[in-house]
Amino acid sequence: MPLDRGAVLLPDGRTRFSVWAPAPRHLELQLRRRGSVETVALERDQSAVARVELEDAGPGTEYWYRLDGERDRADPVSRSLAGGVHGVSRVVDPGAFRWTDDGWQGLAMPDLILYELHVGTFTNAGTFEGVIGRLPYLVDLGVTALEIMPIAEFPGRRNWGYDGVALYAPHSDYGGPEGLRRLVDAAHRAGLAVLLDVVYNHLGPEGNYLREFGPYFSDRYRTAWGEGFNLDGPDSDEVRRYLVDNAVYWIDEFHLDGLRLDAADRIVDLSPVHLAEEIGAAVHRRAEALGRRTLVIAEIDSNDPRWVRPREAGGFGLDAHWSDDFHHAVHVALTGERGGYYADFGGVGPVARVLGRRYVHDGGYSPYRRRRHGHSAEDLPGDRFVVSVQNHDQTGNRAGGERLATLVEPAGVRLAAAILVLAPFVPLLFMGEEYAECSPFLYFVSHGDPGLIDAVREGRRRGFAEFGWQGEVSDPGAEATFTASRPRWERADQPAQAAVLALYRDLLRLRRAVPLLRPGAAEPVVRHDEREEWVVMRLSGKDQVLDAVFNFATDSREVPGLASPADLLLDTDDPRYGGQGRVRHDERSHTLPARTAALLRSRP
Picture (cartoon, one colour):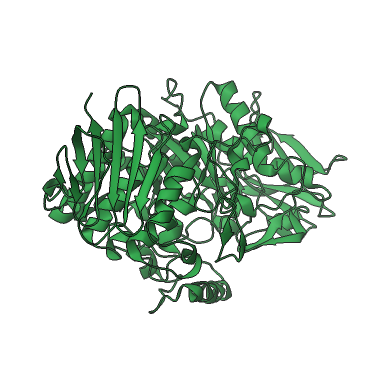
């Protein structure tokens, strides 16, 4: 159902204001209209919901609530904020925008090639409009969907978005609700889906006034980032509604094609139906009613396949989840880093294991955690897993924010591109990865409270200690940290970067053109040689066999047992991609130079 809380425009021209507020003893609605501020008394019903319907309070009207005669607070369900997280709410007409995407029905998981971006740094404009200007480039690249980092209103102008506090209000500096609608509509016209990263495990510390309205937060559970939501205690039904309604709201009013639930397995909920399951069911139900396909993807670290098993099989029924094991296995095989959670990985064995079995840790012992970790997911299709070799977390949560292009040689960058795109999962690229961007992506904030910025600085330093990273840590509160994190798009035209971009384009074209590369089309058979440091993944269809070969060694390797006779569809040492053309392939032998991948297709 369409959103019923907040400021809702009614068919007769009036506006209904509705808020759940059991905490304050006295509650008033204040509006700025007719050149002055008016106060409207509110009475709450037995469920502590206060409502009033008013004339002459249409789109653009600024309003807020006065709690106990002394505190002015924005509506918890503000569709738009004036003045940032400490400002006031603004009435929005969600029906005013003229959509042009009537024929758009969304994409299925196997069709996704995700491109993760941060609106504030993706372009110099730092707006939704700026992203629209680069849509033709993304279409030409070959991705099929944008995944946008969180855009709910956050403090200041610079933030990753995970400190959002007004979950219903698209960030005003990005372009607000109108700008987001324009972006989604333009993306759909270009044939691109749009998914949004949403945060339901916590709210940011600055501008978070929800507790003044009601028991939104739990006094029993804390997350690594602060208080968790009250999802299973007294009065939790309304808290759950606040979050479930928010998920459906993005689908309903902004035509989004899916959501990524940030750190979903950190959401503590001991209810019989976990919040994530309830969100997934509600989003799927609403999408079906609208005649569209909408996806819900969880970020988890638990290697628990229940998140993506069907509800009728005892799972949560979500469409996919992020797989950190893939990233860690490939990253360590390329860089040799073993600090922190990378201690559980090393060599090509984990790479082969994750390609063939979904997880590296599927119930065995994790030395890093000092306990068993994960559960088998071999029965699930590959499209249930989103994988990456770079993303905002694994790049931005490094002390120096280093991208892969600054950590490994060009051949290693090309090898990483190949294994990402050819793997039997759903690939995700991080903005700029496609041309080997070397500028860092750093963590940045612009809190108004200097004490909060100091706490962020200290927290970042402590978090880096277990990895043994050396050197000075960029100041999260400095504007220079933010500007340094922008991709330098002009680099894509330089010969070395243009060659990597050509490789990504050709890989993505192959992925779309060759049915066996579609996730779930064939069960991979994987073999490897730990000493020789190569991995082979075979995909077999009715009339052909594909062999994807990955040589992680720093020397050339002859790889036995490949399909023969076969055509060489692509190799990453091709001079077009910056290589030297040293792959040797005939019916008797297959030799790959150091850090090279090749894709072979058997001839009937």
